[in-house]
Image (tube, helix red, strand yellow):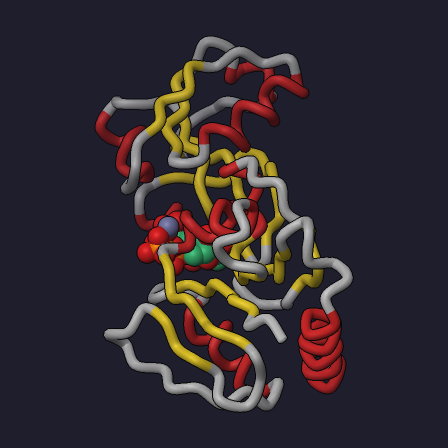
Length: 210
Ligand code: PRT
Ligand code: ZN
C-alpha cells in the first residue's frame, strides 16, 4: 500500500483548521512546530508542512498527493490540480479597494490607474475579462499603504473583516473572487482507495458540523 502525502500550511491562517480537520478524521499524528513532516500512525499518510504558496505546485507535480490551501493561491499559481472538496474555513473575498475619499464610481475609471497587489494573476484575469487596462504593480506585502503614499491609485487584496482596509483609509470598490480553503488532489490519484476513504471521512466531519 502506497503511503499518501498531504501538504498543509506550516503556520498561518489555515494551519490550525487544517490540523483540526485531519485530527477530526480520526488521524493520529504528532504536530511539532519544528518538524516539516509528520507520519500518521493509524493511516497510510504523511503530512508535509509547507508555505501555502508552494502547496498547489507540490500537488500538481505529485510531490504531495493531496493538499489543503486557499482557492486564491491555486488560481494565482495556475496549478493544474483536482478540486476535491471545499472545507468551509479560511473564507475571504479578494477585492479592489480605493481611498475612502476617492470618487471613483465605475470600473472603467480604473483604466490607466495603478493597482498594487500580491495577486497579479487573478487581478489581470479579472481586468482582461472586463476590458480594463490598468497598470498592475506587483508587490509582496503591505499593499494597503500604497494609495496613502501615492504609490498606487487602488489596491487588490484579500479582505475578511474589512478592518485592515478601514484602518488604512481605504474602502472596498469591487469584489473579484470569493475564496475558502479547499482539499486538492494530484490529477492521477482520483481512483486511489485511500484517497476515497480520506475524502469520505472529511465529508462526514463537514456534514456533522453543518
Ligand atoms: O507563510 P505562508 O506563505 O504559508 O502564509 P501567508 O502569509 O501567505 O498566508 P496567510 O496565512 O496570511 O493566509 C493563508 C490563506 O488564508 C490566504 O491565502 C487566504 O486564502 C486565507 N485568508 C482568509 C486570508 C484572510 N482571510 C485575510 N484576512 N489571508 C490573508 N488575509 C489578510 C489580508 O491579506 C489583509 O492583510 O488579512 C488582512 C485583511 O484582513 P481583514 O480582516 O482586516 O479584512
Ligand atoms: Zn503565502
